[in-house]
Image (cartoon, rainbow, N blue to C red; front, side):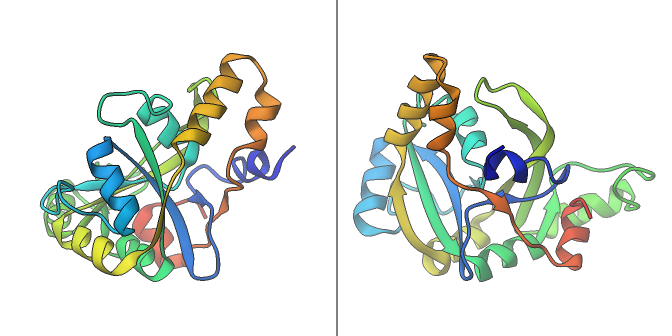
Length: 209
């Protein structure tokens, strides 16, 4: 079993990502008119919008699923964005779940409290089923992190360390999957590991213990 497979079975709600002591890698998909200027400047430029919510995803396979192997309209280019862990953890610490959890489930917060927190939070998070190579849902979750304009400004101006185009890798993996060569496809996946979270962040995110 590869490291990628092993890490994906450790807990139900955990952030799995490529990270270093100071950075973490997230993914976004854009059309060429946004991707090309971002790659050239190593920073998002117009027509990228700072006034809309933007979603970042630490899971490579979930990004592949969301973009349809970088074939969906306006998602033809997948970018790997290395950001500071300090910024990433600010986002997590200032987040609210995008959906309400009823009492007796993951949260004791009542619905009105949740609505107030959601409106006040600059970041939203949601846990969606992780996907396999065939985009079938797996039995554990991947996190998506939505940044509102306040957080987007920090993301663009303070957090980004580097931006790399990984569209070719996405396409190579897709071709191998279509050919049935899953072992070769797996070797091209980033080596994602469970990201360490403080107890406080786990509580905010309703992550697994």
